[in-house]
Length: 311
Image: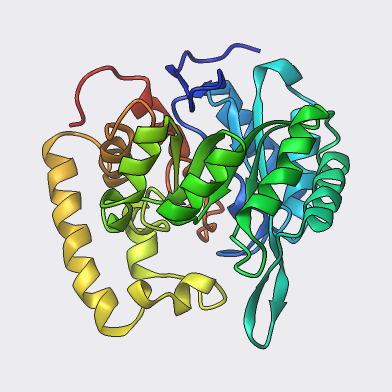
């Protein structure tokens, strides 16, 4: 299989090396869109690999469970040692009160065992605590994750949506390799405290939704979000907020036209250039009536193969 060359970086300080751009698999199984057919999902993941991406992100909550199964089937097409697989546990479901978060040691272990089976792999490269259980000391959760590392079921440990204090406490129990948080042109609150703490401790940063939950990906997201998509209820995609944000998109589009690239390339390039310790994981959000993804994934990937400053 002929593959493009993509820069590789160290994520964290424990030795994990990944492609400078990862791929968030969540959108292939719904959430913001209807799930894509299995064959199409596998083809998209293979396309990402052929473009040079080796870092794939999923979670047991996506589907739930079906996204891990899909990624596991796609992994059969690649040498296991050539890809880095990240998955997560901690979201136990949803009820009338909202998201149920769980971080007890026995729950973490059972989730890890189940993810290994669904992915059909012997180990997980990065295992994240998806959300922090406020009822369980992070030290207890990390203690179990540390055991899973010693057993070889997990190579590296990560946290998702954790506070600076939680990151410090967790890191004291077992070294954290990466922290996953939203970071994009319109979500920058992590720059005040999370980014400095990660860099102080040598922790990699994995921004999800680097294209603003698809907003900077193309006019399809700005003009015609499907009513069945969760994005149709996202505050930034509704009412007066959407009207104001469309102005911002138009400005970005004009700037990208000036420099001969797409809005998605420009927005993603900004995130990529925040540091060598930053590895964004853009996603495919939904399909247009023509059956193609919301943003041109191939163009976005090619942007990362360039060495010049963002245009």
